[in-house]
Amino acid sequence: MRRIRHSRTSGREHATEELFSTRGLEGEPVARGTDQDFPLRPFAAAVMRDPIVPAEPVATADEAERLALRAREEAIRGRHADAITSYRDLLMIAPGFPGAHRALAALLEAEDDLEGALEEYTAALSQAHDPVDILLARGAVQIALKQYPDAEADLRRALKAAPNHPGVIYQVGLVAWRRGLPTEAAQFLQRAVQAEPGNAAAWYYLGEALNQLTDFRGAEHALRHAAELDPAHARTFQLLGRILDRLNRPDEARDMYRQGREAAGR
Image 1 (cartoon, one colour):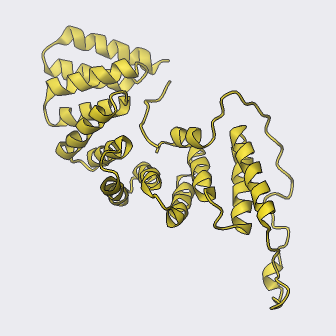
Image 2 (tube, helix red, strand yellow):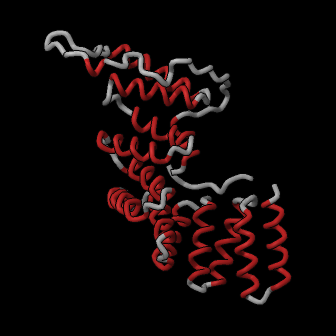
Image 3 (cartoon, helix red, strand yellow):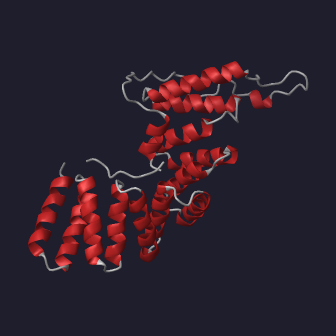
């Protein structure tokens, strides 16, 4: 079933697509080496460090660039596990390499390692000159982890820096809805759909918030927009059916329930 589209920069599919477009490229997974999960120098920490000769090799700029290029190519070809390993190797030899923490975070998010993604977004944020997109991405991960106060703090910070950013406005509305604040959620989600009318998710959650506020006609309007934009999202039709029942339109409600079942079965 096609998922509802989220405007972001949070969502995990969007973040990966933004950083590593896979259109027109193919690649076969490369087998993992037998020693990949084991350190090549397990006793390095026990070696006495000479003040003149470093115990760990110092990476040159060319070596770091080659490793970064390899990581990007693996990500483009959809070899996420290899790309994650390459980015981690890169960050071991060049901790401040530009964009590496953010790229690694997006890959981890795409692989459902949300805790790992959160850690990498935090590291990326410490190096960012323009933090809005990273705050937005970290806030979306925090919402997924149900860390709502932290998510709201990040998103409010992003909103202060970019008050007209459609993705930020949407995510602020979403976290308000998740926290059980439908009035505030509806205000931000109204702004979100005005800023980005094609955001099906924003229309859906606006319908949810208006339904909680017993504005059934407003909820119907929002949900019909959501259904038109994403006819594969079963929950939209199910909620619309309940609202039409409340509006004493049982025939239309039955049709919505039917469409919801069909969407769920796809």
